Image 1: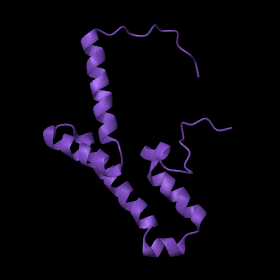
Image 2: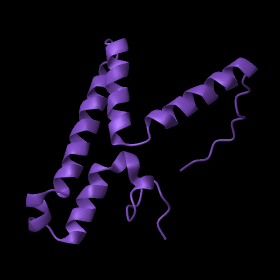
Image 3: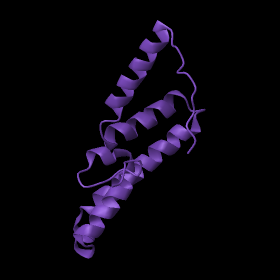
Length: 110
């Protein structure tokens, strides 16, 4: 991959503060699958023209349900622990940093 030598953009004080507020609010809403899923839906209700927000809500909700199913009565008896962990990590790709035993696709692999 080619590295760029572009200079970082200089932000005005108000812009930097706004970016910090957005990052802090995003981190609060990205605490777990439940808060993230609700945030997508709340954003969609405020801005229905942003269709991807509803899609994000549905993907997050369905991923959470799938993760719950892996810990439920039926699948827990059908899958090995290794397979359950693999599927759990796959369904939780937005939360890999918070799931013990899962490795992010962006993480450096030795």
